[in-house]
Image (cartoon, rainbow, N blue to C red):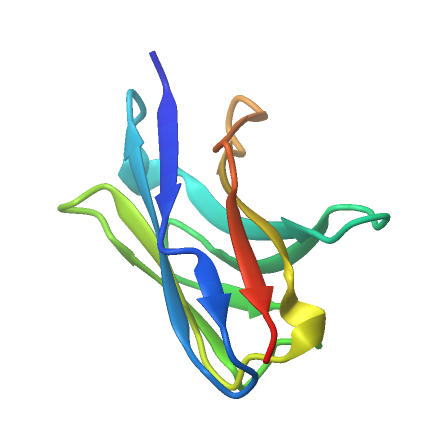
Length: 117
């Protein structure tokens, strides 16, 4: 059974930082592209950042220079370090695991991030 379990969300003031974690089980984690997506109320889900098995990364323009995605294959975990948070970063953040060979992906349940004073 595949599970992606996010943690680390919460309420933070503008300019603050949070670190999200996503622990995966039931998959060969090291071969998956791992991504963080977010969905704000009334908006479509969007890609925030992704990291390939080869550790290449890409970011949404809105978070470049503020967010950093990383992975620890020994712990089957992907991280999203979020700095200089803005109110517009408020959303539910979802972890995604994508296997490009079989074209199949999995989603976590999401974690709420709220940036507000």
